[in-house]
Length: 209
Image 1 (tube, helix red, strand yellow):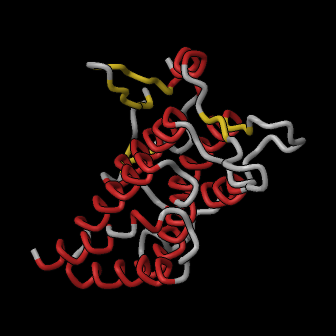
Image 2 (tube, helix red, strand yellow; image 1 turned 30 degrees about the vertical axis):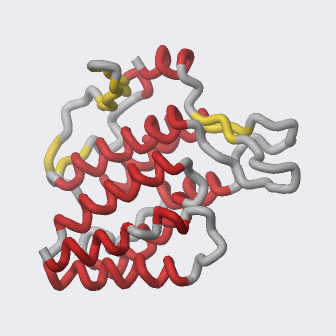
């Protein structure tokens, strides 16, 4: 169950990289936990299914198979996905998970700075996200912003998730997707995830294949 996993694997402990650096870094367990449940909800939404907020913390389970964790919500989804039900799903997930993420410092602030943006993004899904590709740019930028604060392996996992989205787009949509990510890439020359920026090259190879 989720709570047993949280006891044995504290989800996210953020810490300072250097004395004068306030950027927090997430533990692999915390990154995988959050990404795993978000990916579960996204996969459900791609099938046009929703839980419409009808799940509790006790419905979130972490399965361990051959040493690897899997993340599931044990509630039967229903058809009829729209903006309202999509937002309800993400709001509920945020309510359950976000309070588990804290800073392991002496700071009076318990939440990593970037988690305020994360919380807002999960609770305020653009109304046209299902209908307009342009609205994906906001979500893409949100993802890229958070890549900067994750360890290399977790950044790679997020890049793989971006690739899943990319492969699901039509050829015409892929160009707009690349542009929205590429513009953010150019504007963040001083961010620590630059070594991972090669994923834009992967997009290009995919579009040629």
